[in-house]
Structures are given as structure tokens and as C-alpha cells.
Image (cartoon, rainbow, N blue to C red; front, side):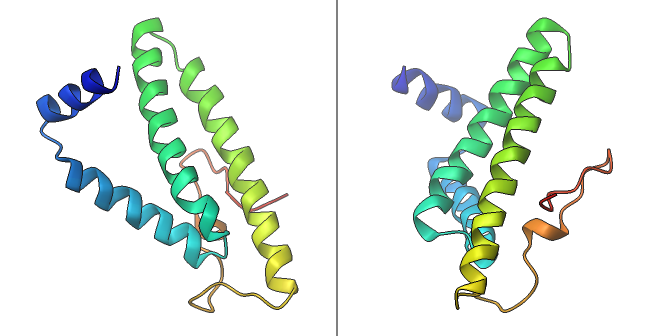
Length: 117
């Protein structure tokens, strides 16, 4: 399974270094937003893998349903991480850059925001 995934990455033109850079940048954004460092890399990986899987399933089923289900799950998890980060900020911790959370500034075309409700 892993060998197959590695082969697919190689065929797609993506190098492992490129994927690592993308994951590190995404994890860094979460960390800047106050998300626990231990969760950032795991969530960044989950976000990419789930999104890519949703694209494959949506194409296969010729339906947006798989993508919408994954998007809803990712949004829920992002909200949970954001709420936890906000609680930690109240406890004396703050985002590393001192600014408002990057997660709170993200809005999708549909108008759905990542801000906790």
C-alpha cells in the first residue's frame, strides 16, 4: 500500500520534499493560530489525505457528496482545534505571532467560515 502511494506520488510529479514542505507550512499555520504543536502535523496530514480521498470518491461516484462529507468533518475538527486553542490563549498562551487566528480568517466560497460557532 505504501509503495503504491509512493509510486503514485512519483508519477504525479510531486517529490517527497514538496509534500513535506506543504505539510510543514500548513502545520505552521495551525501552530501560529495557537493549535497545540503535537496536533498540527497530524491534522495537516489528515486534511490533505482526506481532501485528496474525497476528490477521488467524488469523481468516482460523480457526486459532490463525498467531498461535502469530508469538508464538514474537517470543518468540525478545525472548529474543535480552534476552540481548544482559544481556551489555551485565555490560560496565558497566545498564538505565536500575536495576531488573530489564521483559522478564524478563512472563509470558503460557500460563505462557510472556520470560526467556531
